[in-house]
Length: 347
Image (cartoon, rainbow, N blue to C red; front, top):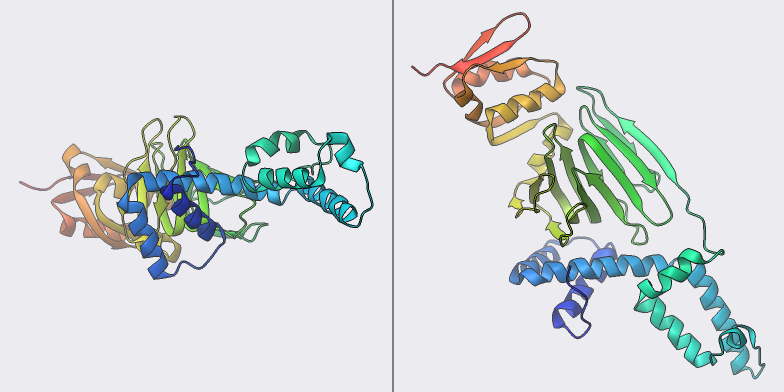
């Protein structure tokens, strides 16, 4: 990640965007297009914005901490006393600083460099204890479920999915070890919302986004609204920013690829009971149907698995899909009691 250089115009612009994003302002179309144009104008812009978002999140935690609030109250009380001509040594005597110098130092620490404050906050016995809220939700095959979390965020779980929720005073973290979930995130700049899946962390920034952890270890991330900051938790790589309509397929131990532009509404059509395929491999399409029903499918000819499939289907009606296969391509179907065998019918 790029270090924040306060003299850089890029970082001044990135700081303005970070403040706007974290303020939870509505994503007006013209503003969204302006941000997209700025990100595409220079590859360094995304790194700069990512760095500023990290810094602003840390600042917000310091600003809202009990430690900082108590210290500011104490300084303000003693400054008021000094202004009234009532000397009160208090913290000044302990630290040997004059009121104005101390006030300036605290403002500098809180407003500019939270990393210098954090060690004191972590070790201060007066700092608040973290409250941990741990929950787990899961769905069976063919089941879908919507949950409202304690922060007001909404999670919709697709078939055969599981999430593990761990909320503290400092962050909101969700693990997605299997399946698929759509996250609609409640605004709270003091507690980042992070989803861990497939060796990556996705941090929401005023966002709705979909995460799908496949059986083969790949993870598909689709941004429906707002921005997501994606970071490889294994490799020491820079975080990448994904914005509305971006979709990436992540694989463990590989660099984050360039995002593809997709119709995000179609990517989450599963919420309304539809599967939408656009030139998907037949093998991947069959794998999707397996998620919703207990069906056994074999490919007698390997090339059949590579046939491209497009269309809209009901995930719970695999019979209709297989009946349509002979119209999709030269595919023959052999059914017995337990297994569907697919083979090439092209002579």
